[in-house]
Image (tube, rainbow, N blue to C red; front, side, top):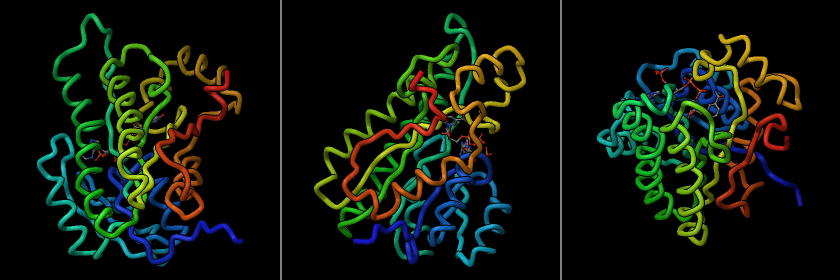
Amino acid sequence: MAISFDLSGKVALVTGANTGIGQGIALALAGAGADLVLVGHLPPEETISAAGKLGRKTWFIEADLLTIEPVEGIVQQALDAAGRIDILVNNAGIIRRADSTEFSERDWDEVMNINVKTVFFMCQRVGRHMIERGSGKIINIASMLSFQGGIRVPSYTASKSGVAGITRLLANEWAGKGININAIAPGYVATDNTAQLRADPERSQAILDRIPAGRWASPEDMGGAAVFLASPASDYVQGHVLAVDGGWLAR
Ligand code: NAP
């Protein structure tokens, strides 16, 4: 039996795809055949243009995911435009760094809101649509801090540990309804999210020294795992948090 990674005719909704991991994943899904509904602050011109060159259709929906207020509208607009959502990638996320003794309520709430609350309610709303159709693939973006404690990023660690938890919870509820829900836990990826770490030569070197692969990841490194988790090849994979980390967790 041939194993299929083909996403032709599928529609993938990806949040935060103007840059970084979201862009890398969106273009990998487009490369495998999926059309894209891209959700974020501003039209992701580069992603739209690259997907167009691959012959894919794209739609942009403007939304600020710091609250769940836009969730219903996003899904309605996506369904009106594209007719269906086969794949949901909850990628948009933020990080705030400060000593735990000084960490502010605002940095707690904003990170928790976008990284885990919005993620859950996007899963809920899109999940209802997928359950009605009896199929769908959801990929949440977790982190090394879904497994480890981290330093000076308390709300980020809480949110990404939460993402791993709700991914497992929803798999328990929805695996029997034709939905696959899993997460990708990227290792250290060279994006805006890690610019501060990479700007600190000592911290940057310490991180690099611990990565068996000997390099930071690029956003494109997340593409293969995303295509796998979005495709029929992963139909029996449920509630898994897949580390794509160059071996970081193996140390
Ligand atoms: P990034 O380049 O900063 O991308 C973050 C994306 O989220 C951007 O598209 C951003 O849009 C969007 N976003 C942020 N706040 C938003 C809001 N309020 N409403 C709508 N969109 C918003 O960082 P990244 O590293 O690619 O991060 C993507 C995901 O991977 C995040 O969930 C992050 O936690 C996770 N992750 C990253 C790493 C890493 O090493 N880089 C490791 C593990 C997990 P704008 O540019 O318009 O703000």
